[in-house]
Image (tube, rainbow, N blue to C red; front, side, top):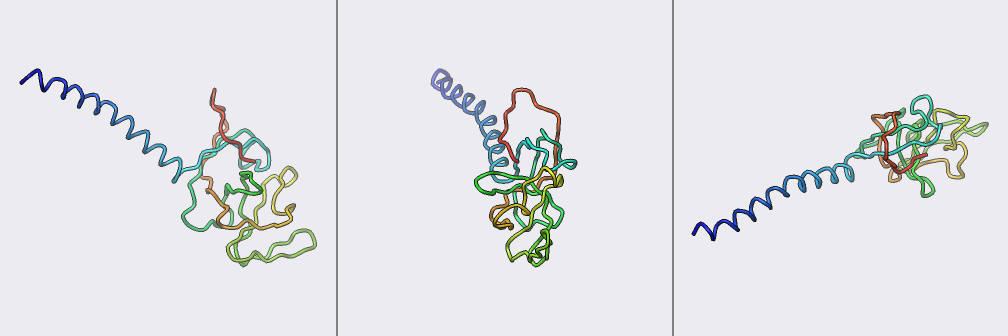
Length: 153
């Protein structure tokens, strides 16, 4: 009887030794896919708030962004990071033109106006709510050796 249980015990130990790391890995992947956003900013468009070469950590959107939030969003098949300066119902001045931000849309500007291609320069100046991916809550400028993240402009 002892010999019959030995292979079964070994198999159970093997399963247990893999279950914890696999479970932790799945939880980590779930958090990165559905809760957190991790990216790299290669441009100076958000300086001084986010320096060129910074890594950013954001939380994926479950509510509405507020005025002043730094958001990651998709625009023309690229991920961009800019500050929300106009929320639905706000009026914004772009040169001599005054625009009203429509419902479900936002007006975005880079903090470094001279180096930022943002809502002021686009044909359609507003970002729709469904295009916003995350709100940035942390950044780090120190480079991580060997790490090549997805770039956000």
